[in-house]
Length: 259
Image (cartoon, rainbow, N blue to C red; front, top):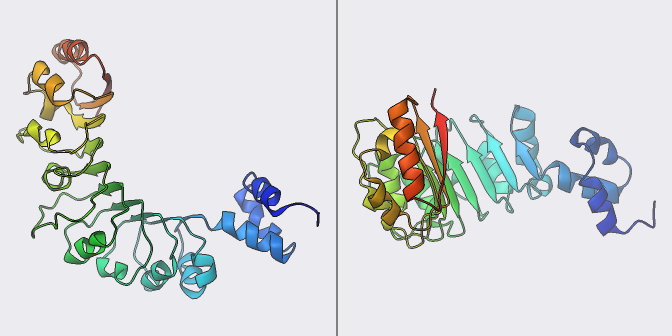
């Protein structure tokens, strides 16, 4: 076992069940370090001890690349500040988004249900490497959004009001519009304001229906995937989807009946 190259050991540990990694940490110092790299790489916070561990151990926190937390914690801010190499962050039900103040990591993706915040905007301004932003909230932005935020954004999921802010002037190629009121008018020219062609779109059929199919084809000349959320898949809707599919020949239309 002493002759196993570190590179081979790391490859082996990638295939070990995560439940067995703590046991391997007790084999030797080398096994411990390599096993912890795998064990702490992706963290889905489910109990307080995990946050406490990451808040108290900067060494372990530096190994975290992906972190998900569904709730707040008194030590969450300290834990996040220790995760200097974090790349993916998913935070939900956070009462004070200022816990991100002082964090030094550079994210590739962020998922958050608290988008309307000056603290969050200040944080996003320091994260030019983010390419994926999912903002799960239905509040209208109450303050101007800095145009310099998220210059490399390519994937976005948000309500219509936030898409109006996040798409223009950015190289967005994949868009998912969170559910809006059926009667809400969607100005489809919004999608032409991206600096890159839209390849993938997930949107409610009720919001896209008023736009003629030929107009849609001109707005999305490069689209490859169009997923429509349909609440009532009757014969009339099926005919409309068929026509849309013929005119938008490059697209794959996925019918998903909403609950």
